[in-house]
Image 1 (cartoon, rainbow, N blue to C red):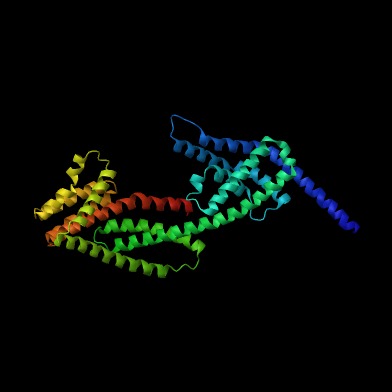
Image 2: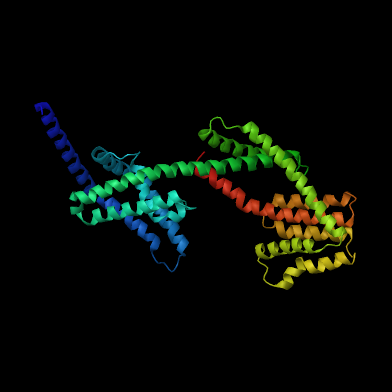
Length: 388
């Protein structure tokens, strides 16, 4: 062995030992920060008679996220991670933000890892293991010099970085698919509103303007990950889907009418009971008597069987139902459905055709209310997550 190589080995070993000492020193310096993060995490399990469990969890999560985003915290941890990477060189990307995410994953999986997948479960398990190792380092300084302990720690850091990389890829894929679904939903609604006679000119303009802004944000996110995404083809499929949906609506109304003409009332009764159940649940109606004042499916079927329904009775019944259903949605939805039912007066429909249309309009209102409550807010939340 040459003198130069011997000197090089000695020098390398000296540098490595020096860096390990610096790393150990840095850990001791910021140990109090790790202890503080652990204490914040413990708050999620605290008992407070004045707050419900979910509120306690949310407040603890908020405190933790604020803490790990603090510039001073990030700077201190970056110094530690930079030293760590010089000594142990992780196999995958590893920085201060990835490291600080350990506390989020290990203590708040119900918030950040839902719905759970195989990759997310692995991420949760390894995060909890590493946090446990950090706890032991914080409690016992001697562990910093325990070779076996550190080998195990570094091994799991490598596992964590690999799983974290897979998690990010999976998460991006899920968000991308959700965003494509959002694009389809918004685009469909824009086309439907443009072709609709249910809105006046100013209403159309305002609604479409808002939707186009959302569409632009969603499109930007898709292009970020699929630069050559075929929007032309997806737009064509959306138009074909709308045409198919319109045909299905006509067929559905015709089916109700045919059942009424054939005096087959069982399916009609089921639809009316579904509407009744929605009104009961959403309007929190407690007594059956109060509910039957609004809609009594069995009584309605009796009226139909005995030919006791006329146009005004059906229109008024439809408006009353619509009011009860759409009070859970937006004012614009309520007004739109009222106009739809009012317009049926001038269409010269048979009693069964009129009743079939009124039933369908109110059934559709239920799904539109659900869509406003769930889908719209879900889309807004997604746009906030994407930070577009």
